[in-house]
Length: 208
Image (tube, rainbow, N blue to C red; front, side, top):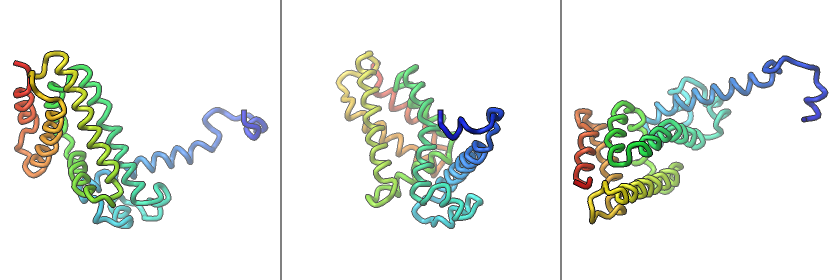
């Protein structure tokens, strides 16, 4: 037990007066990340100053810097939020249905989260430059995406669900490229049925 704490008068749990500022700070930080998520999705990242971001999320640039320290740290928090929000359910779906059935379902889901897809497409384009603060993150994320799809295709092949003679390494690249491309097409024209196109490709590579 901490010495300082042990010498204080007895207090009701949860009413020490110390947790509220931290909790309020964490809540405010989460609200700012959520707001910045929407701003980056709509306007990108590179063209915005910290003052412009602060104005767009409804706070001051000093408050934004107080919570995050820099524009780059805010972007990192937004990227972490995106992964925390979308990652777990995809993993669970793949474990239940397998990759070939999951991919069209994911695309159907993505049609309902335009802001997330817009942010993803915008950052993918902007982060191509090696000096972009999200470059290393996006590169690692792309590599992980391809590797995870390849691993799942290996499982599909072992289970007899993938057409024989196909290379999981090659097909993994095809699937990830198709996902990125069809989402971009959909951002331009929402009449594009992303799930339908991915289902068509899955049908081509499934074991008949």
